[in-house]
Image 1 (cartoon, helix red, strand yellow):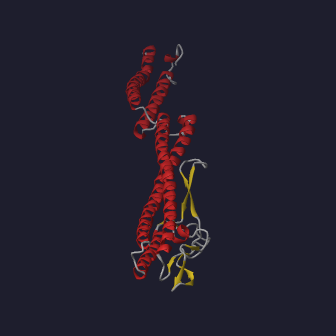
Image 2 (image 1 turned 45 degrees about the vertical axis):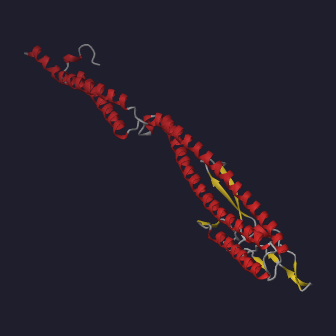
Image 3 (image 1 turned 180 degrees about the horizontal axis):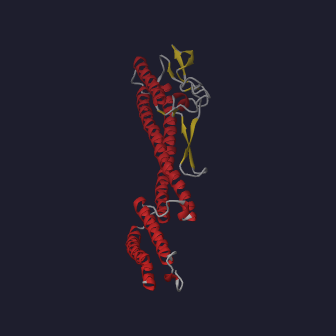
Length: 324
């Protein structure tokens, strides 16, 4: 602001310099306000609000992790949906096995008819193994248990999966997808005799009528029905099928529990994403109503500052009156 008597000096126009400074500051504010409106962000550089910029960056990082975690949950549900669908197919095969075994357990059938039924049940066992082979997601054979270190063959047991369902290290959900091949369903403890020994003409013959072999590396086990298996052999086999059906029911229940947990986590993630996005928006985003009001105010100040500068530049003309 010029001091008393400055207007009488021509060489340095203090009033003009002050007006230029004011106009430049207003023009800078206008440019800043236009940047906020064009980008939609209140903070475009760290110098705009260093603390707010740091907080918003952390929130943005968290939102990115939460969004990916949401995608991970969707992928995890897809994996379990595939396993569940195959479990359902295996269960259908077991139910059909029980129906056939119940039919063969009736003494109204002869040995030839029972042999036909045994062939059908063996085929159903092969179908179960084939379902296990074909249930694949990415590089995982979901229903064949844990794989060897080289990725080939199968071991008994289950496939352990751990899903990253959050943006923190500890945000995981683990589940085991149990193997459901013939070896696991009918002979998890080793080769198992599922029927009494056969007899031929009243004399005991060697071997067992019905046998299930254990799944080992590179194999999945198999059901074997000898010719001449009796109705009592099939009655024993009914119990084995019932046990396999119970095992499948437990497997489905386990997957259902994990699917429910994933659904809850999906809802929680959705709420967390919304809350964090809202917090980031309050810090980073432009309030357009406020920015527009500020734009009008600055435009008026720009016009008045321009007018003041013009008057200041004409001020030295009054000095001519002293020398005229």
